[in-house]
Length: 272
Image (tube, rainbow, N blue to C red):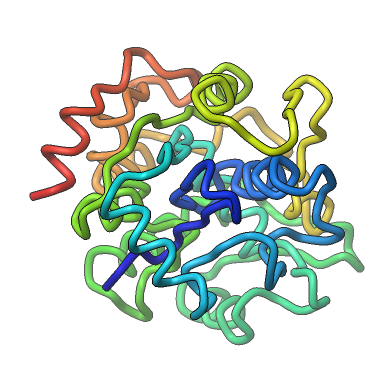
């Protein structure tokens, strides 16, 4: 199993467990910059060297040895489940990807056929009923997670706790879990806890939102997308995420955390 989704700086100053749709592009670029004094030219997910990634064979023994010995500061980043799944819908289902195509080829036609989802297109300026389509997408997301059909769940909408747990189950230990909603505060804690070859000034680091501009803009406030049934589905899918990472299930309009993350609780509950 190892440590899928884990990145580490070449200097081994820090180790990061990627959680999709949770500021991962920005965090990856911060890690890259902290070693090299420059940003990766392009989407950091496309880098093949100068940043260790579990997906790169040559990086695996280095990451495994480091994580098992807890030689470096290890962290991850999470996000409100309501805004995260909305972002996944607009980016992955409605949006056109970097390669100019729809995400995962036949996925969107499948959703249109089986769930009656509309996604619009650049030609019609993405004109469709966002709320109705999103709620149907939620049914699909629940089906993939609960029953693994009509396909296995996708990393962009599977629960954050599932991503976070693989690191713990295989012998890793987190020093920090950053909230996307309090990103600068959380990342500052990370930067203050480590020594990096190049100084990182978070105030001057741009936000690398690689999914922006590829699809429709969200036309309504977050809470408008979630009626009582949608909230029930979201809780069914993301119950552990709300509870462990201290987000407000009762109020989709409140994206901010409502308590402090208990790292001991996270390790105990996700390490079972």
